[in-house]
Image 1 (tube, rainbow, N blue to C red):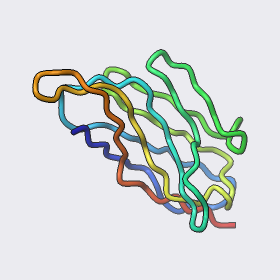
Image 2 (image 1 turned 180 degrees about the horizontal axis):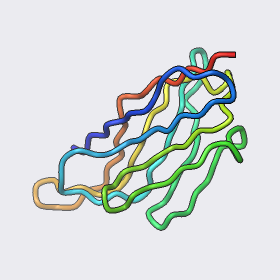
Image 3 (image 1 turned 30 degrees about the vertical axis):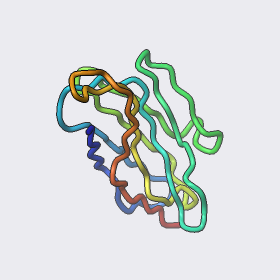
Amino acid sequence: QVQLVESGGGLVQAGGSLRLSCAPSGSGFRINAMAWYRHAPGKQRDLVAVITGGGSTNYADSVKGRFTISRDNARNTVFLQMNSLRPEDTANYYCNAEGFTVVAGSWVDFSSWGQGTQVTVSS
């Protein structure tokens, strides 16, 4: 199973910046799309940004122009650069990766989630 490890969350003042990272552990997988979601208390988990294996990106309207998703394909690592942070960005941020992994000698698709990293923006 592909496990994802996130880092980079923390406490920042409004207007500040944070950079999240997410990398898989293990081997025997090929990752296609990688994405960041966030889950704030009392709300549903929402997509923040997604990047395909070819580098195409898409963002939630609420973060366009402030957040940038990127990836290092050599290391299968995805980043989320968050600028001009607002208190409403406060949430637990989760990394997601989809692709294929080897199970019993065959390639099967997978979708894995990280454990989440807390981002808190103070006003």
